[in-house]
Length: 162
Image (cartoon, rainbow, N blue to C red; front, side, top):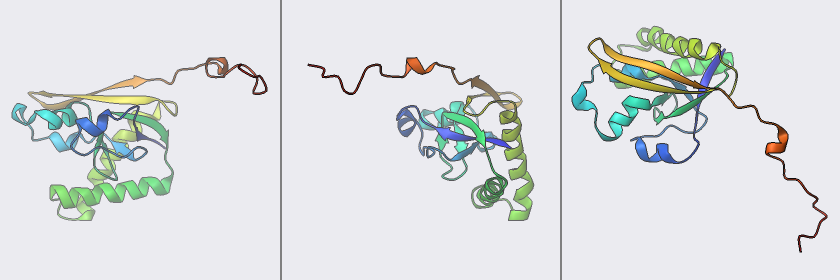
């Protein structure tokens, strides 16, 4: 199964989110956090998290970019447990058993989003408030193919540059 991990191209996430996700942690959309939000909630770093932030499932911080990668069954199970525990601790789910199906739904949604993409495909999320609630859309950035000569340094280590 494919899921997505947080990636950073620069340090901007450290400045735009209250709590940035750690590079390499597994992520889900995390749109559930905003289900009761209104326009009045959309200011500053909270607005950035709403507008473009994926939710890390280890730190529960936000990140702008995720990359598709293979997840092993034991990783999936650990994510399922962590997300369900988060629903109990933060959102008041009555028990871990009650939270597990909701956590499973979040992870399955992410797996479906990632399933059709090659590893290392980068995905962004964009959210907006509508009369019907939070609307999410995704942008897929496929990895660029490049020949080795675009990255190789040509020359010899034996040459004297002087």
